[in-house]
Length: 208
Length: 146
Image (tube, rainbow over all chains, first blue to last red; front, side):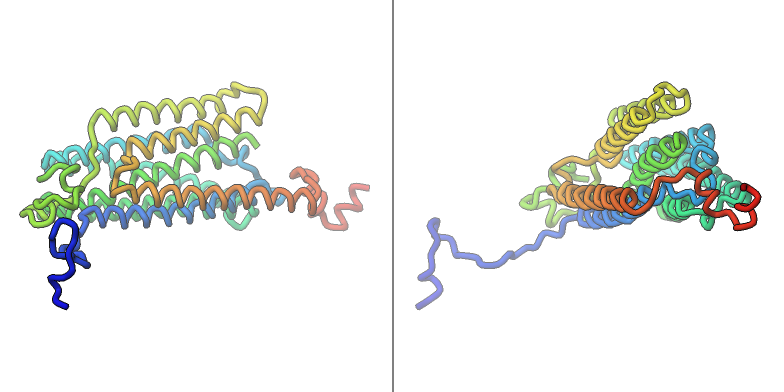
């Protein structure tokens, strides 16, 4: 029996495989999104730890003694502002304006640095006051959760500086646009995690 | 550069063979979207800070619930306006991954809190820091107390 004997309703030659496998360009962003979701699970576990240990003070200080909400408001504002300035950088990237992209990225990095400096300052004060991560289960889980977020911000900043150098050298190529889009997701995601931190850890902890 | 909707269509010939093959399929972001998200975020951040710092409610549980509610709403606002989350991006796979993650997060958080709260309630007497101090006293200190 020849192959021609197999016919479809519209007399076309049947095709049993995909000739042209489309390579979705969004594949990178989808992959990065799935990485962010796995990162989200890390934070969920750390939040769960804090929820469980958050009241085990071991006769040590509680959140009401330690948290300075004035400075928390400043660092929260810095991170929120860095989110919108990164958004502006992305809008300028769509318009292919390299200088404006670099300027907005620099402003974003400055806000990120302000956040980081405030956090390091807070951690230093707490450790020097004898409220380090070794003091109680509450402080162990606090430093693990907030410190992990701070490390993410640190690496986000390193990534941002790297991209700024790359964009300054070779312009807004397709590769750099994709990397900026990934960092955009990462940076906004960190701000999203910070919402959980300042609500669940700081504001509610300050009531204890 | 082809528009976002065109490049998502797998049957689009230009998408497969076009010269701008290397272009990134970026989410469609607008200035209005970012500013709306920012405005909402500012409100949703200031109100819980004000509730806690201004001691607006005397009921602690009401304050906690309100702070958590504002946090949850702000997370959704960030998802929509900053992370450009919708059911169409990446052919819906972004949303699928997100729903899966949210389910795992809810199970992890609620399961841990529920079980460990029960454990604590059954195993340990509730202690204030002062009571705890009593337990960490040395025998000599206990003698002095008497």
